[in-house]
Amino acid sequence: MTVPTIIWFRRDLRLADQAAVTAAATKGPIIPVYILDDETPKHRKMGGASRWWLHKSLQSLQTDLRARGSQLILRRGRASEILTELAQQTGAREIHAIHHHEPWWLNAQRDLRAQLKGSGELILHHGNYLLPPGLLKTGSGGPYKIYTPFWKSLRERMPPAPTIAAPNILSAPAKWPASEELQNWQLLPSQPDWASGFDAEWHPGESGAQNSLERFADIADQYDHGRNLPSEKLVSRLSPHLHFGEISPTRIWHRLADQGALAETYLKEIVWRDYAQNVITQFPQYGSESYREKFRAFPWRDLADPTVQKDYDAWCHGQTGYPIVDAGMRELWATGWMHNRVRMIAASFLIKHLLIDWRAGEKWFWDTLLDADFGSNCVNWQWVSGTGVDSNMFVRIMAPLSQSEKFDAGDYIRKWVPELSDISDPYIHDPEESGAKPTSYRSKIINHKAARMRALAAYAEVK
Image 1 (cartoon, one colour):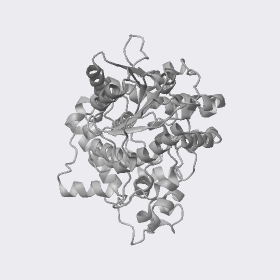
Image 2: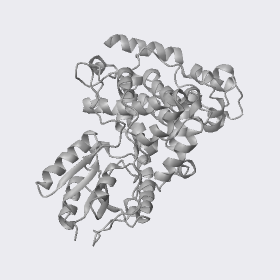
Image 3: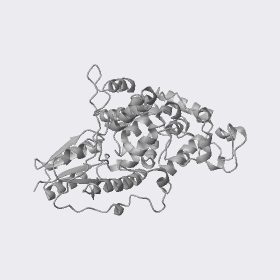
Image 4: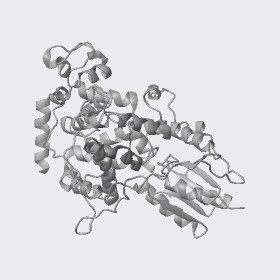
């Protein structure tokens, strides 16, 4: 009988436009496998919110596989070791997977090849990005560090290759290996169930991703303006689907590119995701170390100080006294997601108003975001903090109160900060200053002017 081929799923939980699935399906019987590996990433294992999404996405993938005569095998442990054992048990000579470029997955891919030792082969395919990270080169032959020339170079290579439909039937092996039960992984929170509001907001899985794309396609021409308005529903909310690979960036490009300039602002955001991965590929320590050397001596306030920890906790839980910041942080806790404009405001507030290290914020986002992507998360935080390879200047300090009014965030605040639900515009943006603050809403934990002066003084020490 034909020996089976293993498909190793990671952040590529789809069957359509999935090169590893397409290639393996032509070989004969396949064994789709997902391994919950918390050992290889170490401190970068998935956060709580991402684990909720993973549970739902794996359920969806299992349903899609069974509809095609197959099933998903679940295992838990070190991926390279489990895959080697599965290959030996099943006689599989090939393991197909999508390239992953995070440092821990590069290690796992290398370890797997070493353990197979000629008895099998790991075959990697591209598909998580528009172009393979590292492919684009500058005129001098090096990788791009700055986004704008990266975008222009990638744009010249678009459109990407046509998408590939999911196979209608997947051949099953003569005997299935044992599988663990998804519910035994306890990915869903229970005591307490802090994700109780997630189901009303999200529909993980490949069909959910496609539905989200179609919804957004109808309003993509408003994205350039609407992406800055948190009170409006004019963004795609595709980021968790993209992060878990339930839809390919290629499919998104082809669906939206025919709208021309109207959709180009959004397509630039898709390219930013490629750019972030290119940065991480060049600088694997980007998530733990400021790129700009002078910032490595920046005088961040010490979280070991109870006063600083108290400020950090207030930020995490939306209790800063700044309505737009508090609304964003509460939206994050309630839904696992935050509007992109508000992400920038909230991140800037932690870094520059509270003078707390960007890595503390990145860590909180890693645990609470459904779309906690290593490349995007780290590159975005270093962009806001001014520490990155291509980043905003530290001295550009966002004024959250004026940002709130500028981008008409009143309804957004009323939704997520119920203490302020009865306050009308324009007072809701700064109820304390306008004398409209109810006693149930806390006062600002720091004055904007004082925070700005403190941040600039700290910057002067490393300038």
